[in-house]
Image (cartoon, rainbow, N blue to C red):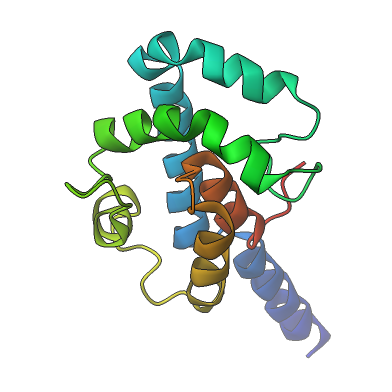
Length: 148
């Protein structure tokens, strides 16, 4: 009996330790974003990125450092638009394509995840006014696993 209980506890712990498919999809989205951010868009908008990164009131890391949305996010808005366009996530009207993000970037792996469903709109509302896609992905990722 004790042995069976121990096996059950170990099995439950190993299942809960495995990352969700949604978290894996968000991690992949972050890695792809980092690759895109280092490419052509970075070359074109390096001064904006430098200005943003140099200001202590601005941070790409959602929730870890002070961040003044109204001051900071307009600095990198065109840089983020470039990244979104390159990734196929910018609509013709210049807005973020939520459907494409969920379908192509996350490959529908977060559709039934309650953490994702709960976090999506608050993260979107707090980061995407000026299309700060990097902070958006960090915000979503941080709802599953603290970013350090």
